[in-house]
Image (cartoon, rainbow, N blue to C red; front, side):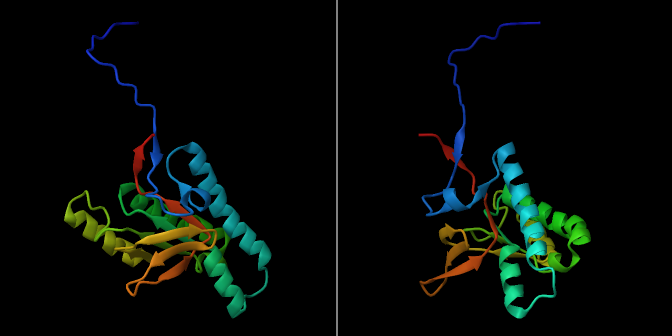
Amino acid sequence: RTYSIGYDYLVVAVGSYNATYGTEGVKENALFLKDVSDARAIRWKILSAFEGTNAAYPQPLSKEDEEQVRARLGFVVVGGGPTGAEFAAELHDLIRQDLTKIYPRLARLASIKLLDAGKSILSSFDKGLAEYAMQKFARDGIEVVLNARINSVTDQGVWVQNPHGGAELMRAGMVVWSTGITEIG
């Protein structure tokens, strides 16, 4: 069945870009949460981090090896809005419920950090929901870093401005950038 709809103006909105705010290295070193190809890349990166680490370190880990494994299995999510917070929670569930069964000695070394530039996560929602999420993340071991000013993203992780004016590297094997979208051109 076909039918007609009258209109005064036709607006064609064909897409948007991820908002990177001009942060150096984001496009080259971070993964996004915008479409199916992004989801596939994220899935591959997570699984290859565990599988590659397991193959590289079949024996008990020395202190030096353990630090390298922690860096490789460090996951940083930039953006504490609904998409970033949901992704951090789902990643936690994947690691704790599924990957722990396959890689029990490695899963305990994995970490998730959720970074947001604001004073709270889920700032567009009710304050009670944001507080509940913060408490849940704390119980689950997801570290939330607020007022995080990202200087750059590299293949080693995220450089975050510290209160003293310098920057420190938050090592990560995968950075997911979920700070919203911006218009094209």
